[in-house]
Amino acid sequence: MAEALRVGIAGLGTVGASVARVLRDKAAELTRQCGREIVVSAVSARDRNRDRGVDLGAARWFDDPVGMAQTADIDVFVELIGGDEGPSRSSVKAALEAGRHVVTANKALLAKHGVALAEAAEKKGVLLNYEAAVAGGIPVIKTMREAMAGNSVTRVFGILNGTCNYILTRMEAEGISFDACLKDAQRLGYAEADPTFDIEGHDTAHKLSILTSLAFGTRIAANDIYMEGISNISQADIRAAGDLGYRIKLLGVAQRTESGIEQRVHPTMVPTASVIAQVHGVTNAVAIETDILGELLLSGPGAGGNATASAVVGDIADIAKSRPGFQHGPVFGLPAKELRPYKKAQMRSHAGGYFIRLTVHDRIGVFAAIAKRMADNDISLESIVQHAAGPDTALQKTVILVTHETTEAAVRKAVDGITRDDHLTDKPQVIRIERAG
Image (cartoon, rainbow, N blue to C red; front, side):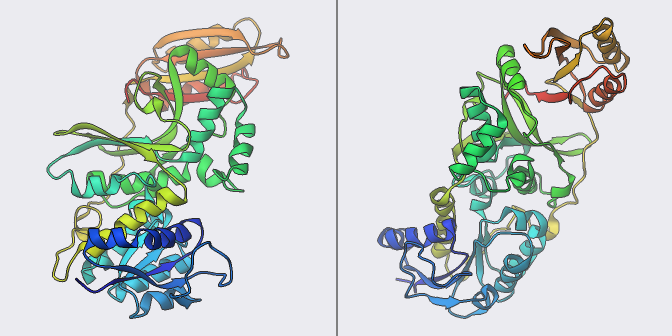
């Protein structure tokens, strides 16, 4: 049997402790599967004395993760610190430069520095594995990187943030407000004390940028993503979506067009009968559309200690199964130096149309003025419905518009015009509609 694979874990929070526990509890099974033993030989964290529910006494302790990354006592450096700068970046960089394999769950680090780190890994001939960085326990990275040879991807999209999906699911099922759902998500540990990163779409954007690179062979471009969160989704939107036969989900979407690559994160109305609409709670789902395979949907636990730990351990096991002289595949499917510059697509018509909710003054001429703004911007309306805004708002009306195919620019220009006309009493709501998915 080959020598044991020595693992160093940097970061012993929920995920790090879960990884150490799985490696201990499943040691015999992993040894049989990998043909060698996997041992935790070193650890690094901020608090040496904290009880993490797993015995780490046999592992060498490092206060500095960079020192652990450089030590000859480990073969694999597991980064579970988090953040795109500071100790996470410096320790991963040090590990790669020292010729250590790296496993990370850090999507923010990869979104910002992934290409440079991939170049360092490929130069040293070591692995940089990151299954846990996107969609938790769902093996989407392995699928895209290893199992789809010959396929050309046309679109990849999905529900990539469990916090947002949990909130939207509860809002629909229980008829409660966004704020109430968010507070409950924080109480249950599904949302952070500062939830901005999740609810405003940043987390989804980081994950999407990684999938985009894998799908289309481009350099990661996390800063070129149109991004809109769910904090302005109301019960009025949830109810209107249901009445129209749709359900609201926060989607990350990347697709190839004639003019480049389009990346966007925003609330989306999807048909209630579609598969993606049936993904509830903290579950994640990723759909990949290709020329050969057609559409593949992967769904499963997207967050939490066990789901993320499962992906991390899977990455470690892949390294344990490799042998000296084995030629490792590129980090992002193509050699890092061959990744093409990202070319942002030009604005184009959205085939699914748009849902527009306007709360307006209840006065003569408003309805006609709204219709004129739409016509002036060449927007064809599938339906337009007006009803009372609520029992305590007698001087207001809610107008719900559903458009045919049009551009985002045209919709925004029309809504801006209606706002300037001083017809609105509240912020307008615009949500894309996906006809399929």
